[in-house]
Structures are given as structure tokens and as C-alpha cells.
Image (cartoon, rainbow, N blue to C red; front, side, top):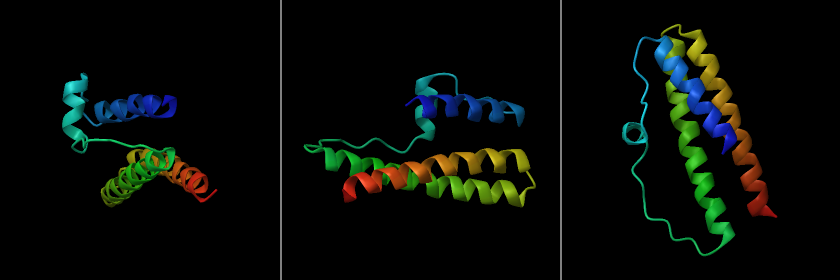
Length: 101
């Protein structure tokens, strides 16, 4: 949670540095998030599996955005996205290890 909260600030600062307005309210930020689905987990394994799905989706979107940033020679954004991708890939490794245990 703390890492993701910190990431929102870093991403918002980058959006501003690129000359755009970053979403300032939760209602605005929701427009960028995937649509919410109903969650009804009964086991910890189901919760972890759901987190794996979310981290996989985030990693795919980050790879796509990083490729576009790189194609546009935006090294700062590419570097920021590489850091975010590293976070999500490590989270995936840990979550997969939990399920495998």
C-alpha cells in the first residue's frame, strides 16, 4: 500500500512535468483505472490470485507505455516506468511463491 501510494505522487509529478494536469481527486483518477468488478473471495488463495491478475495487468500496461515513451525518446518517463515494472514483477514473484507454498 505504501509503495503504491508513493508511486501515485511520482506519476502525478511526471504528468505535471510533461505539461498536463494530473488527476487531483479520487473521482478523477477512477477514470484511468480498469472498471471495478465484484469481489467475493472466500479464501486467501483467491485473494492472492486476484492480486496476481491485477499485477499482471499493470505490468502489461506499463510495458506498453514504456515502449511508447522510449519510441518518443522520453527517457525520464521510460526510467520511471521501468521502476514501476520492477515493483510489479517483484510483487508477482512474491505472490506466486505464496500460492506455490
